[in-house]
Length: 79
Image 1 (tube, one colour):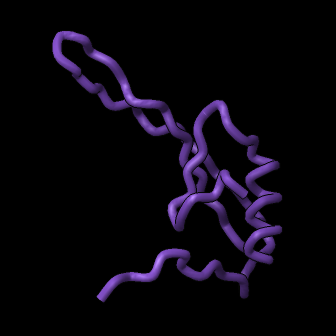
Image 2 (image 1 turned 30 degrees about the horizontal axis):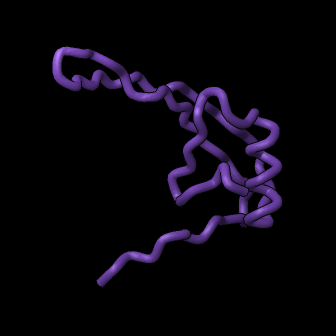
Image 3 (image 1 turned 180 degrees about the vertical axis):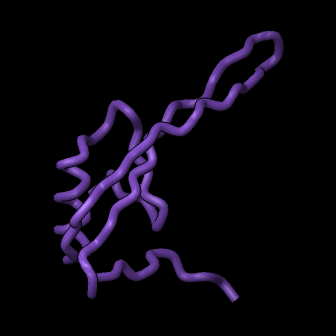
């Protein structure tokens, strides 16, 4: 379950497959997934002194659940 970190689920490009993520979400939260959409976020430039680099590239997964299922928030808001 180390692929799921918090309410905004992140997964690196070289990480888990869509099938594995679907299985993790269904197993961990006890819900049924009907659709998964993904897209790669653009890389951001980072500069350290004279050297220009980039951040790691991530893929965002948008998971659609069957009606009647929901995932509770993992992190409580502080008051």
